[in-house]
Length: 459
Image 1 (cartoon, helix red, strand yellow):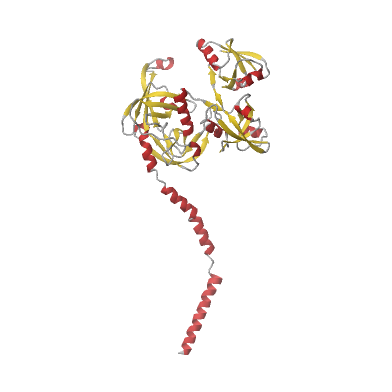
Image 2 (cartoon, helix red, strand yellow):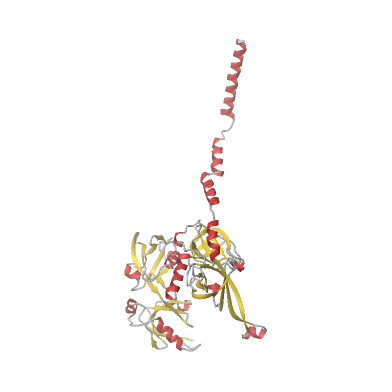
């Protein structure tokens, strides 16, 4: 018995040694691969984000919004040719042409914000709610530059509406809903995220925009609809898509709610939009880099308008704007977007990079008033005393923009007379132009930057 026990003990020890030796010397160590596999395929942060995204509930935001997003039908009168002669030489019977889009009720008394291109040239506006009730609507005002229009329901009822949110506070990656009423299908909701902020679709446009870009599906008929956050607050007005086919391909763009709200409030209070500007001219980043200027982000100040808020506030040529009121300015559309929500005489804190350091100065925004002189391609604005003194004149308006490269040298010149009549402001220019007949030549007398007096006749 003792001998048997000894043999069993020896066999057990030998087996343990054999197994241990195999584990140590032969079997590969897989612990590192296991850890790597777990961290590679099931990382903790990924699982957490996935659960968080799946837990996001859109139903409350959708329920708050769908009944305040409406279908807008626009009827215009246009002449449609009925034969080849009318096609080439004009004429034809006046017939109604119907277009449509979406709109957002923004107040209980029935004010609706939509796109200008949805209601442009309308002779009749009809609005259908999500419950199929139909109302006539009145055009209150428009702003083609931002593509925003304000209309009002012809009714004394109280309506569901969407409250404005703060579009400055949205973040890239934030969930949003696009709510529209296309093709009179009643309200339609799609979801996506904020893909980019302050997106300018055309950096060479004379009227740069600053859009919110999302991947929420938006198609024709959604124009004028609501972009809302998960709290059901209006953060944008859906306006455009980029597409080779005319249908949604992954990108949609909305006017930020802060800009739309400011336009609407200006229309209601002043009858038109009051634009506040710093009083600077800028140089695109790529052109600045070609001139040897060290800039990757920000807005380069190429010139300061004499007597403007920028001039009085202490901004200088060569400064690079980095922030306004604490909001980061990476590109020109950031600047346009933020100032688009401000008014003349508002004070903004501008942080600039100068000589390797940073400084912040308060700047009072000045009012932007412009007028395009018909048949000349020149845009003019009122001149302040400092500008007039700099050119040695007592009256005139400043050429602020030119439609062609041939006229570009006239930018900054002061026009003192139009058709041989003195002008003191753009209202004088408007009055003189109204007195002329269609196709009449336009004579402009101006002083250039060298102090020379010249005249141009546009035919």
